[in-house]
Length: 86
Image 1 (spheres, rainbow, N blue to C red):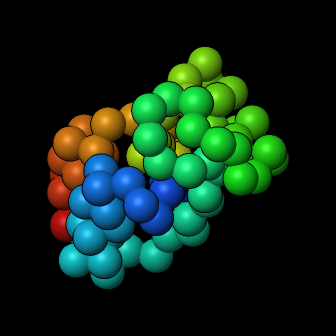
Image 2: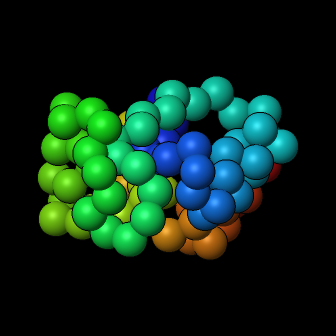
C-alpha cells in the first residue's frame, strides 16, 4: 500500500499526486499539517506524529508498506514511482 503524507496546498505534494494519478496507482493520503515551511500548523496530531517519527517534518512523504520504503522529496518520490509502478 502507498501512503502519501501531504498537504493540498503544497505544490510538491501536487506533483506527487499527479504522478500517482498518471500511473493509476491506488494510495491513501494523510494531511498532517498545513503547507509552508517546516512546522506548519498541525491539523492532525496522529498523522503528524507518524510523519515526524523518522525525525523530519517534511512533506511530501511517501510510505510504501509493501516494499518497506519511506522517502521525502517530490523528485525522489516521482523517480521511485516511475521505477517501481510505471
